[in-house]
Each structure stands twice: as C-alpha cells, then as structure tokens.
Image (tube, rainbow, N blue to C red; front, side):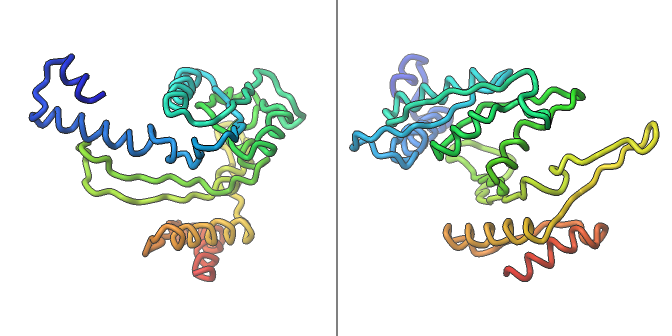
Length: 235
C-alpha cells in the first residue's frame, strides 16, 4: 500500500515525507489493520456480535470508516445496529431505548459514534446515560506518540483514568435566582474507591510505575479531600 501510494504520487521514498508515510502505514498494519489487535481470532469460526450506535452528526461517517476497517481486517464481527431517539423514551428524559441498553449487556461489546445531546430540552446526556446504566465509571484514555508523526511533545506515553459517573457528571443543577445557577458536585466514598482501585490495578496489569491523582482538595476540602484521601488509602 505504501509503495503504491508513493509511486502514484511520484514521491521519492528516501525523503523525510516518504519515510513518515511508510512508518505510519507500518504502524497501522501492526495495530488497527491487524486482526489480532482487536483480540478476536480470525482462525475460529466463532462470530462475535457487537452492538453498534452510528451516532449523529459526523457519527455515521466515522462509524462507516470503522466498519470498513473491520471488513478489510476480516474481523469476525456481526453488527447489531441501534439508534438514538429524538424524543424521550423514559420519564428521566433518556434518548436511548431499554432494548439498546439490553443489547450491550447481552453482547458485552459495543461501539458508538459521536452523540449530540439536545441542549436545553431536558434530555439527559447520552454518554452519561450509558455510563450510569452500565456502571462504566472509568474513562480510560491512552495518549501515546505515534512513530513518524511529529507533535508538540516527543515520547509521550501516559494514560488518564477519570471517574465518569459522579462529580460534575451527576448532572444536578438548578437556578437559584435569575443569572445564578448552582451545580452540585456529588462525590461518594464508594465511587472514589472504585476509580482508585481501577487505576492502581490498571497500572499493575500494564507495567506502569506511577499513579498520579489529580484533585482540588486545596479548595474543595471535603469533596476532593474525600477523593484524595481514598486514593491514599487504596495506595
């Protein structure tokens, strides 16, 4: 693929630009275009059923690109498509139907495109709905430098793990008086323990040497104080 691209565009393969292209393509073949990257075996006849939410906005376009990659990599996946509704399907203002949630619980795997929650219409955040109903309390985001791709910082290799269901994600707010809104940041001992234990176990499982807990206990002495003290207990 890389050599054909270079030939078609008449690019000298020994130039810095060409070397970057080649290194990026090799990286893609080792990762995203490698069936083993998805932890599904292509030597078995077993097909894995995966729930798919194409999303909205740019979601369907992005989701289709992922489907094309899976097809090219011959990943044994059968997709079960579900959509996001434009009107509430529950008294809480949820836009995700119960059968869609049940599909995720049944299949154990799900992929979603970007969601857009209607603003100012009383609907609960779509992402928060999924997190709360499925107890997805840990948001895990690896950040790693890609070979051949120059960025502001070199040799980046960090993982951020964020609690997903409490704090600002509690979604509890009200208007005190015109022009003044109060937002309640809920923090519980149980949620603090869950995310701290998850982070330390992740570090152990992935050979990480350090875990850094970020907090605002200097200002929010009770709320973030509970968080950091719980992290110390778990450590």
